[in-house]
Length: 258
Image 1 (cartoon, helix red, strand yellow):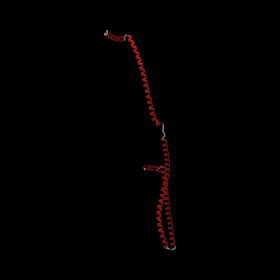
Image 2 (cartoon, one colour):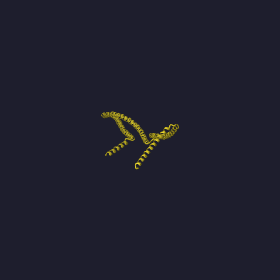
Image 3 (cartoon, helix red, strand yellow):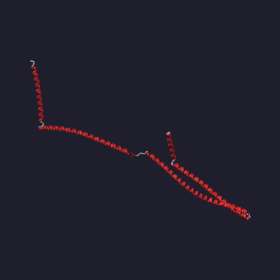
């Protein structure tokens, strides 16, 4: 049910969006103005008709008063005063009606003139609003076109948008190159160090040999030779004493049996 009501709300909103379309609203407003103008024109026609009717009634009443006066004059000439008096009474009543019609007609004429002015102003307003509606519809079309262009351009990408990625990649490559150069430099230093150590050892050996030769030449190495000889002699004597001891022990054992 929730999905159904959500669908109804979405459908209603979509329908309202269509109904609230500016172009549709402007067309409806223009039709409403035309309908109102047509209705007012019809009312003005009715007002003018009534004014013309009042004018006809006034004209008829005026002619009737003139006719009654003529009839009263004729009756007097014929010596019929009662008939003449009757015609004059009717003329007086008709004159009263004429005065009433004149007032009503004056009001009707004024009203009709005001209605004509109002109708003319309304016609001008309708023309103005119609032109304005056309201009607004053109603006609405332009806005729709601009919106379509904007939506079409939303998916466009330009090189400067990737500058951040390129810069990051460029920095990472530079860091990696610097690290590789550092490792190469360290390796070169290590090999060079080993070579220098080997050269130092070689030079040390050569220096030792030269020093030994110099000591031997100067006679500074003799005590060491004498010491070695003494040590050797002591060792030989010890060995000789050990051998004599063994031989002595062996001789003593051989005389015991005899």
